[in-house]
Image (cartoon, rainbow, N blue to C red; front, side):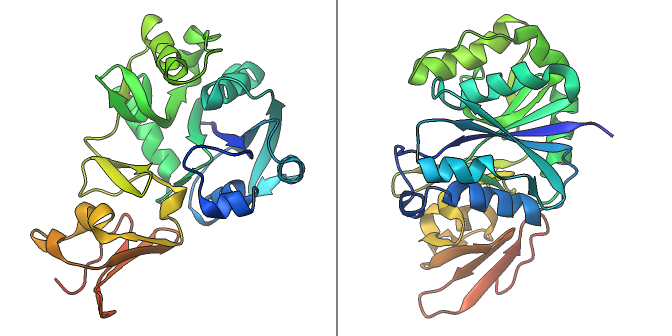
Length: 276
């Protein structure tokens, strides 16, 4: 069985489009993320939290004390706060290199949303090759960078010169793979990729298929139906339904009409439908 290391880039300070729950409790993102990992079925060999220092001191201390998520061991690496998640992932690869067969790259404000997400990602990597992310831009850059990289290919690229800020950092990160002959691809033909914009969810990819990761803003809170899951799973014509979608348990979502009638109950990966 392939050895897979789940690299979770973590920051406990203020951020753009801050979730109000994270603003009130700076441990919120990592706690919810590890809860999701603990509930999901997977075969991860290790979860590695890469903590960028300089955020909330108490939250940082809490994260440094974490040792496991469910039955999966957790290691915590601490680094300076530069180059965003890309710097964190690169730092982790410097530490582990070829100790693992694959590295899953995830930011702390997304959570895994289906069982065996690791197996699915490994399958995408084997069939597509290269660095497989959630969404590419112009078929060259990782627009949503969560994804998977085989260590055999990452070793060609590293170290990547990414000590920049802003969008240049993201472009530098992915172009380093391309320059070293590692293709950057996404899985949007097979899965969907939701992205949180201020005030709502924007969906990319095959919207009638479930996502591998969802933004933390979609977990245990209501989001407008028109901006959320109705566009992903609902039957043809039902996009006009007025109502709300509540993502309230790992892997489950419920669409309800304004009078509270349940019209569809969904288990991610099984697509159970009622009421249509």
